[in-house]
Length: 172
Length: 336
Image 1: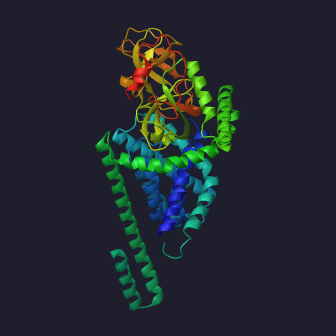
Image 2: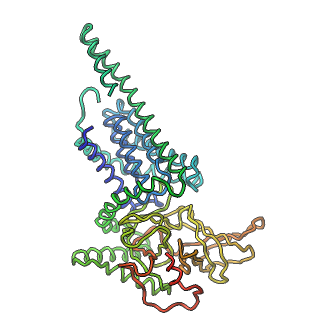
Image 3: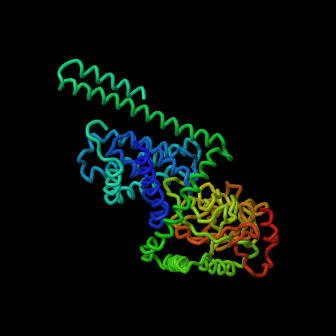
């Protein structure tokens, strides 16, 4: 990956994060908004495979962990999104020519895995004061929101990523 | 690097051996497993990196070496959040206008402030006159006085998926904001400053599940502790635990901040909310009550940080000292 391409992806992640915490903070459902950084990782995983998705997951996760207004143990989101990047990247071979419904299903799975892993790390580290019940509600509303914005944002992200790294023929 | 060279030598030997089509297929499968190995190794490396980060951050406790990284990231991302929110705030305020009467009213205030803000920018004025006007009003209304207030706008709200209720404001170290300062709004207490970067700061809201505020019951000055429930939907409630079990809070009682030493993190006498219901259990040695916060956390916009007196840009409201206050706020903020 060239430096320029890396900076392009970093910019994409920063834009996703900033829009998530500023613009979408006005459209939250019970304080819950869509996880745009996760959508970037899923989109990269489906189009480019696990390695890029894991790299984006790690960087995007660090952004969620360190950039204001984050206030939890650093590395938690990074861990979740690396796992999601790996899992979704493995699906790539089957995702060629997936229908929009299938893409939304993948987003749903990714959202559930990422959020519940985040809750789980919180419980393990004692970094959360939430009950499992309340956490489950947040996970499910977040999942619904991610699926709701996916039809609009996934094609956009796909286009942005295509511009950043044109599809490679043969081995990727 | 070594992986690549090994990879190359293998494909050389393969093409040198026999029929082309078979070799290509074989080579392909080799490359795929090779690729799988590389992917798995990257996964392990990244997971280890995350685990290291978590361990370092947890192990270090209060002064984590990652706080410096947080500061750097904050200095970089904060201004971007600030800029984006300035552009998107007026747009984001529109659909909310279709809500209830209460939020409609706050929306009018918010849009007005946003509009005034933009007009000020157009006029080339540095002073956020609209905010100052609002803040003067809020200070007069609450009857609280003596504190130097640094006006700030909420520019970003953390996702609930992170399970913390923290927001970013567009004032930082440069504007005299430091960690553990009190943040308030027109209606009452908002929270405290967790971390201050150069131009932005992170504020922990009192509705965060980990937030604890010392509160005083208006009627009989009983003291207690208020904990948040993590909800930001506007239906969030605080749990008040009174130290004295014989205290009898009644519905509608006002709860104000009790004030900490040197006014950090909370200055005294700020309205927190009103008692909504009282829970008494005979087994419990304490009295608990549910407090409805005075601030509507679902529509936070303009807030104020209680900064040290004499901070440039801060407003010191020119109102008479209230008679009821026992400790002079001027002195209590002086320690910061």
